[in-house]
Amino acid sequence: MEFANIAEFRQNASAVFDRLEQYGEVVILKNGRPVGFLVAADASDLDAFRVAFHRARAQRAVERLRDSAVVPKRIAEAIRKTRRKLQTRERASAAGR
Image 1 (tube, rainbow, N blue to C red):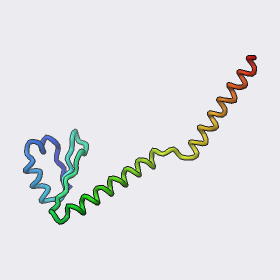
Image 2 (cartoon, rainbow, N blue to C red; image 1 turned 45 degrees about the vertical axis):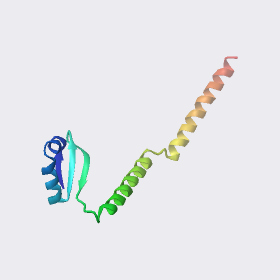
Image 3 (cartoon, one colour; image 1 turned 30 degrees about the vertical axis):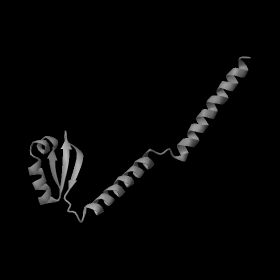
Image 4 (cartoon, rainbow, N blue to C red; image 1 turned 135 degrees about the vertical axis):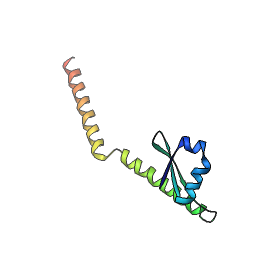
């Protein structure tokens, strides 16, 4: 896998595409962080690459959702805390009457 920074890509895209043909993949970096991924493809591979890319993107989205999902244990904890707060307020209200 080859890497090219965005400045190099802007200044000399032809050289980056030459490396793409040679290595098959080039990661484009901006400030040292990946922002793009070039993959060499011909017309017969284009649809297969497109489908694979969309599947990979969907799979990554599902992984992000799973990572950020609220688990049942956290839901139960939130319910317990809320009930305790409500009970404390009710007691304080009853004592103040």
